[in-house]
Structure formats: C-alpha cells, structure tokens
Length: 495
Image (cartoon, rainbow, N blue to C red; front, side, top):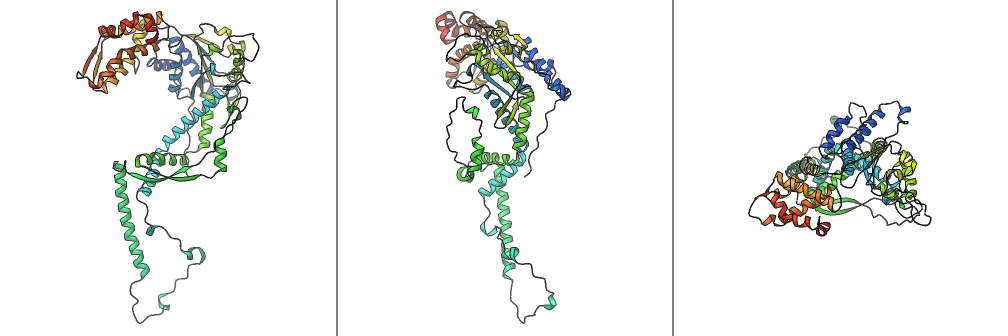
C-alpha cells in the first residue's frame, strides 16, 4: 500500500513571518496591546533564527518565555491563540491552578506536554488526510458501489483446480487430432464464456449508471449495509498515586494486538457510509509512524504552551501539613519549563525549545512572588493595559469578525437587516466601560454580556417580526440597558 509522505517543515527565515507582519496579522483580531504583540512576535521570529544556526549552537539558544500581566478580558489568551493559528504551531492552553504538587491526587504537570503532543498528532493526521483525500475518495467510491451493487456470484472468479495442481498439457498439432465423422455441435464452455461476457458487460454498464447517480447525489438517502471494523475494548480502571497519566500505557494498542479486529454489519444511509468508509480508506493510506515523528518534531521545535492563571500559584507559604502548597506546584512546573524529557505513549518529547507563555492578573500577588528559579525562566514580562471606551468602540467594529458584524449576521439568517448606528456603538462602549468601572473589570468580555442583553428581545421575536429592517440607535440602547446599568445591584447579576 502506498503511504503518504510528510513534507518537512520549512525553517528558513525567508519562509517565516517578520515581526511587523505578525503584529499586523494580530491587529486584525486584537485591539491595542502593542507591547504584548511585539514581544510574542520577536519570540516567534527568534525561533526561525535559531533554526538557521549551526546544530551545536541551536541547543544552546533557549526560548525567551513570556509572562503577560493584565486583568481578565484584555487579550492575553487571544494573543497566544491567534499567534499559534498564525504559524500553525501546536498549541495548548492550560490553567496552572489545576495542577497539584507531586504526591497529591490531581493532574501532574507532565500531562500538559502529553496533551500538546496529542494536539500535534491530530493536526498532522488531518493534514495527511487532506493530502490523500483524492485517493481515499476513489477507493471509497469503489467500496460503496460494491455494497450498493455487488458483483453477481456468477461473475465472481472461481479458482480452477488444474491451475494449482497440474501443468498445462502441451498443445497438439491439429494434424494429430482424430477426425470424427460427425459434428459434436457448439462447445458448451465457449457458450458459457460468451454468456458470462454478456453478463459482465451488462453488470459494468449498470455499475457505471450507479456511479453516475452516486456522484450526482441521487443515492445519498438510500440505506446501504456495510461492514464496519468493530472491537470491544475491555474496561480497565487503574489507580496510582500520581494519576493514570504516570502509567503512560497505551491500552488501545495493547488490546489491538491481543484481541482480533472484528467487523459488524451496519445499515446506514449512503451519505453516512461514505464518511465511515472515507475514514477507513484514509487511515490505510496514512503512515502513522511518519505522522508521529513529524508531530513530535513540531512539538519540540514550535510548540506553544499557554500557562494561564499562573498568579494563582504565586506565593511562598511557610505552612506545613497535608495541604497542597503553591510553591510545590511551581517546583513541579520548573523542570518542564527549563527543559526536560517527558515520556508519552508516542515516545520521548523534549521540552527544551517549547515556548511557554504565562499569564495572570496578579492583583494579589506579583511575578516576584514566584520562586526565583521559575522567574528566571520567564525573562520577558509584558503588562497589558486595561481597556477604555475607545478600545471598546474599536473592538465592536474593527476586527475581522467584530461583534457588531456577528450580531447583524445572526439576524440576517431570519431575513432581518439590522443597522447599528455609530451613536449606538458609542453608547454600548460607554456602558461597557461604566459597568467595568463600577462593578468589576472583566475587560472585553463585558461587551458580550451587554450585547446579549441588548439583542435578547430581538432574537426572541425575530421569527415573528413583520418588519424586516431594524435600526438600532443610541436611544434604543438606552431604553434596553440604561435602567439596568443605573441599578448597580441589578447590573452586578445581569451585566
């Protein structure tokens, strides 16, 4: 079986985005925060620069990890997520607060690398599935036709005993054959072969007709019975002091080797059968060893781990006892950040060149409350600014898929054209800023709560409205939200 080949990732500076290009791309989705964008752009460019160095120097150049300091909703997570999408790098977002000190029940810190590897495996496998899509589609079409219009039993190849056991007799000259004084009539084997040829021609013509119908979509809802691979996996529970991740046993592969793969018949529509068979055919064409190798290479050289809520584990308590200490979690995270080898079910993964972007509000604590060793592994610190009224206004209108465009598009699905005026946008931005100042600053997330409340009645009544054109101005915004904003006790719960 021909396997798909994986292209090596380009690593020259000519192929990498420049810092200015990275910032320009981030500007399409994130308003402001230039310093944070600048820092991540430089860190990303330095990765490409490192790959251009000699091999002995590449290992010496460590990634410049970043700590983003800012309240919730100012764009910390979005910057990291958009950055990963921009460069198609393996990316995972984890909360530092969900990890526990070694010896306590909970997730161990190495699981973040395992999860990152799983993410990379899925991405590379998807890429390879797309690469072999055409071949898989052709094979799927043939299998579907076999199920819809199977080969008649009379046309199926029957093995001949003499082919396997006896040699072909030598052909005799016609002159040596005995000449009979009477005609034996037509040869039955010749007649049978001619009949099979006619039946084969009819079958092929009918099969091609079904092929045309299949491509035209006329058979999508027709039921078809297919054979699907099925394997009953036994349920196994394992308890260990450090959690099941420490066991790191691939039970699926183990049982695949022990238990034979079985098939079961399923009766499904042709559309669903195509999806099932397409997946099976694609897996036959994909070289999983190459996928795993490429995925681990990407994780080690371009992986990004976004470590959120790191401020929740900042602090050095002097208390003793069974409680999980924050400093203990920091010390467990330290080896992963400074560079170690994590064993996964796909093999060893080195974390020496994975980029870690930590983030936290640091309202109560500060980055200096982290243990010195961990502080030293995050040399770049960026403070994100709180959002003001102008920022809210820009967020509503400027990004590629801004909130105003989203809500207008949702109403368009009901056949309603909604025009949101400039003074309405000014009023929404002012109300969001006011509520953040008076209740609690949750950044741009406040816009989501206000927009939902503003459009609540419209979304509810939209299917029954006779009027298909609506203008939302400042007066409409005030009529819907002003009373709630004035009542701080009410806005605390609603907005």
